[in-house]
Amino acid sequence: MRVPLDLRRAYKLLNHGPTTLVTSAAHGRTNVMAAAWAMPVDLVPPKVAVVIGEGTFTRELVDASGELTLCVPTRAQLDAVYAVGSDSGRDEDKWALSGLRAAPASRVQAPLVEGCVGWLECRVLPESDVQRKYDLFLAEVVAAWVEDSVWKEGGWDFSAGEEYRPIHHLAGGVFFATGERIQAHKPEGAKK
Image (cartoon, rainbow, N blue to C red; front, side, top):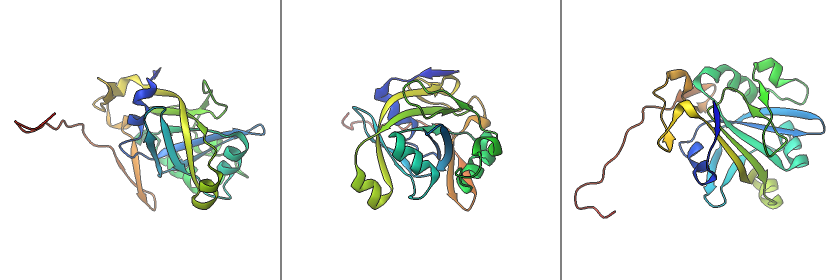
């Protein structure tokens, strides 16, 4: 079940480097695309960065609305993620082609993607020079959600099953899934 996540912990949804699904909405249309280059950049208020290429339909919708969502897809969604990262939504309905399902967000018009394990609703910060020069969008997270079956003690725990593991794109359709959770311990005598 999707449950709210304290915004102070929103960075934890992206700090392990998963591929994300970026959604956008404007002019009565929505779109979804895969993005491997998304990351947290600030804690309070939480901010993220994501690369959205010039000339893409997602870019057009984000430019028009100033909003987007970042959704953390799972191993079970691998083929759909690859499909929406390979085709344009300008002339095709990527939702229908991929089988991904949209759900309403709480604070932005861009939809959430059902079946993911993390969701960030974001408002774009006005950095037009950075966007134009680097295709880099900075956004403030205004709502965060996590799948409660994979969130234990304030962090990810994917022992619920392999299908819930987020995926990471390497290149050319090759991905890997997030691995096991392991805990480091400081050596005796180390400062806290």
